[in-house]
Amino acid sequence: MVDTFVLTALFVLGGSIVWSVICTCFGMVEQKFRTIGDTLLLFIYLGPGAMNGTTE
Image (cartoon, rainbow, N blue to C red):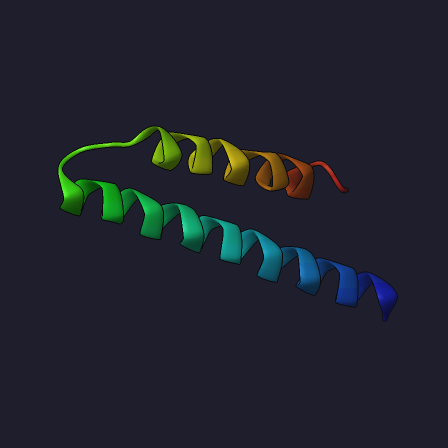
């Protein structure tokens, strides 16, 4: 039961990280220019995404 909850929570967390990255990328494409804040935000998303992938 606990393993199922952990895997479900990791799936939801991973999905929300991927969704945030996609929204950020589309926002940068719509603006037609990038700011340093957009680039740093992608690196911030990379950290939790890497930790989410190494839990098992």
